[in-house]
Amino acid sequence: MKALTELAKRRGFFFQSSGAYGGVSGFYTYGPQGATLKEHVEDTWRERFSVAEGHMEVDAPTVMPEPVFEASGHLEGFDDMLVECAGCGASHRADHLIEDNTDIEEAESLPTDEVAALIDAHDIECPSCGAPLADQPVEEFNLMFETNIGPGTSQTGYLRPETAQGIFVEFPRLKEYARGQLPFGVTQIGKSYRNEISPRNALVRTREFTQAELELFVDPEGDGPDIASVADVELTLYPASEQPDGDYVETTVQDAVDDGVVEPWVAYYLGVAAEWYETIGVDFERFRFRQHQSGELAHYASDCWDAEADVSAPGEDAEWIEIAGYAYRGDYDLTKHDEHSGESFTVFKQYDEPKTVERASVDPDMSYLGPEYGGKAGAIADELESLAKRDRAAFEGEAVTVEVDGEEVTVPVEKTGFEVSEETEAGRHVTPHVVEPSIGIDRTVYTVLAHAYDEDEIDEGERTVLRLDPSVAPTGVAVFPLMDKDGMGELARDLAQDLRSAGYDVTYDDSGNIGRRYRRQDEVGTPFCVTVDYESVEEEPETVTLRERDSTEQVRVPTENLTSVLADLRAGETTFDDL
Image 1: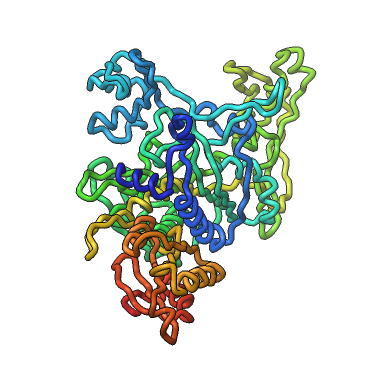
Image 2: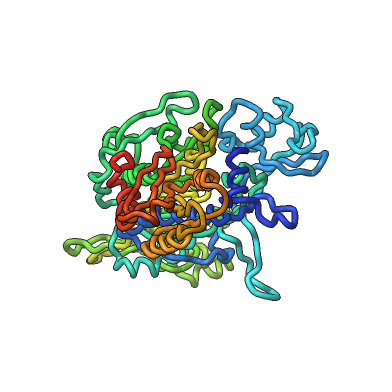
């Protein structure tokens, strides 16, 4: 990580923000190389997960009002464990201290009292000052950034901790765009914010980050996905039953579904994701899908598989980081927003033929409930209505009991207006379930860099090289004149402009000797370099030297063919060996 972060800073991939003012922990600026790399990763994700799947894309605000997060559960259940040092006052994430100082993994799934006991038992000290943390309380800390919307008596808002809620709250309108047809998907790429207790590891744990999320709305009673297109994609799975010390399961998407290891919709997107990760240069020797254990599942998920990558240096112990989550969220989100907003978060599902059904209803006698129960009368009526829908048998006796504000209230059935009637229905309203691939773009970028980073030795000596896939490399091709004289510089500049016009990200460089220029491009991952030399300006037909980054091999290519040759190389239709 140290070597990579130093390279990233020196060559303009990423660096800590606000350095002129001492920097701010957890915030990073992408430099010229990194911003383009990140954009390319986002573009390839959009092409595969949105365009190729036929989904819609939205761009929602990053600030949302408090009721959104009351409904979603983030105000109550979006916490990390915090322990504060009595010596220096520094705050630390307690579960990370456990993982860093013991053999225990996934400590975030443990309750706070157990984490506090482990800190005591292992005599864990403050990483900042070395003071003992024993006997210090471990508390839950909400990770959302709070803000005010408007002046004066303003409305409380929060910076969104995930892009998903921006999609969920707009479901009533989005379903209209989808004409109420399930399944349909909505994607979004954007910033999210979490007030991390202890940001660390460069882009791996930050307070501002970019997510690429797909929310797929499916009929819970409908057909599953057609997995034929990804059926044979190979997966490395680490099921919860095999953790922490068991074996990986090497399988295919089809077999994972047939064996009941992965829910079909999630399995489909594991297959889609595996193909995508391969195209952007993730090393599958250092990659796995790990299933969440029950204690670490988010409050909204019934099942989740994380895409994890090992970003350690060769020969070191594995350092697995989560780069994405593939979750089955059920109907949690839409049900919560339906309850809190007063809007309908359901889809009308029409029957093939109308059906006659029995429907239970109540019409409470408020002239009885009001005098008898006062201010609770309205809440009692609501509870009676809810009970009639889910359990009509409760009304078979002389009285029915409901719970209001923690107290049981008994109402005579004759005062509830309970009845069962027959109705003819053309269809019914269903609450869709949600399948969510959620990709951390920053962590994916970091993984791509870590897996591309290499140090090797060539004829000219040692070099550092990023073996980035051409689909995401910040610069597609670099153009050099051997020297900026005798027409070579002019020809090289014209050639660079022609390549830009053809859609290539091009760097032009005439500074220093040619070997140093190659090294600079190797370090930023440029897959191909074009050199204009004396032969280029003196001989016919006009040719240039084309150099491949990984092998450092060179070939002469006619200038008039250069654009098509580069296009074939980038698309994988031609290899450098073919040339």
